Length: 125
Image (tube, rainbow, N blue to C red; front, side, top):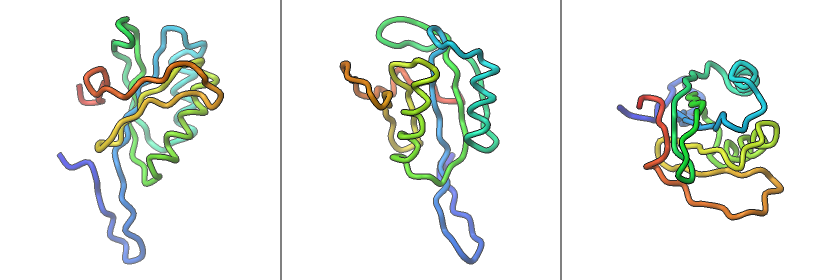
C-alpha cells in the first residue's frame, strides 16, 4: 500500500503523506476525549484508536493518531514538540511512512532516545 499520493489539479503537486503519532496516556492529564478534540482542531479528519504500547520497558495505554498531511516532517515534529507540553509527555513518537522520530518538549534537557520502529504502534497494527 503506497504511503504517498500525488494530487493532480493542474497547479500543484504536493506530496501527501500518511502520518502516524503515538501519545502516551498513563501520565497524561488530558482525557482521551480532550486530547482527540484538541488534535482534531490541528489536523483535518484524523483517525484515532487506543491501544497498549511499550516505552522504556513499561507498557502503557497509547493514543494512536493517523492523518494525511502535506506539511514537512520537520514542521510536524515542531507541532508535536509543542503538544508534549500540555500532555506532559517526555516525548511523542511520530512516523511519516519513511522515517520516524521521538519529539521532545521545546525545553527538554534530559536524555533523548532514538526512534525505534519495533516499539512504534502503526495505525493498522
